[in-house]
Amino acid sequence: MSAMNGPAVSVEALMRQIEDDLRLQLRTRILGRGGAKEYTDEQLFARVESILRRAVEEREQHSLLLPELLSDDQEWQLQTQVRFSSHRPILGKLIIAVKRRLLLPVSRWLYEYSFENFRRQQRVNVMLFACLEQLAIENARLCQEIEHLRKRAG
Image: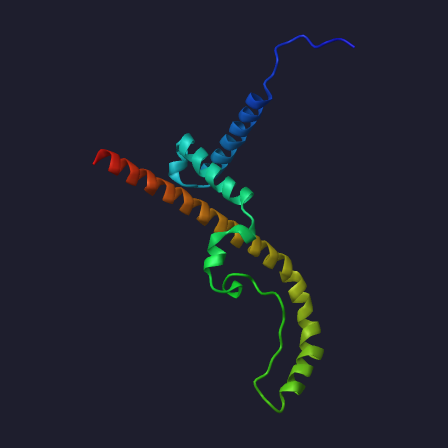
């Protein structure tokens, strides 16, 4: 077996180049679709992409602040359970039984068809919460830096 003679390749530099190429392709595609004109600034786009990527990749649903601030999960989580109820005290049990025997089988196909869309929407909701939280963190940092600079200048 012979040793390869040639310049050493830095994996870090290669990965950075691949990431830069992918970011350029993404930016070009978004601008081609009519994306925000601010994305013509390569550094700004890289910063926005970094913030959003970090928010999506590093946050878990149960570690986000915004859902904790909402008083109840039912306010923001999609509910996929089918619940039958009736306000009628006498006929209520009969009405619920009819709904379960007739309406549930008929609507089950719709539920199964929609379930994947509900799951995707829930994922999008969590990602949006993560992005909002990351942007709030970035905003709070900037506010702290401005306050610090004002104190130093004043």
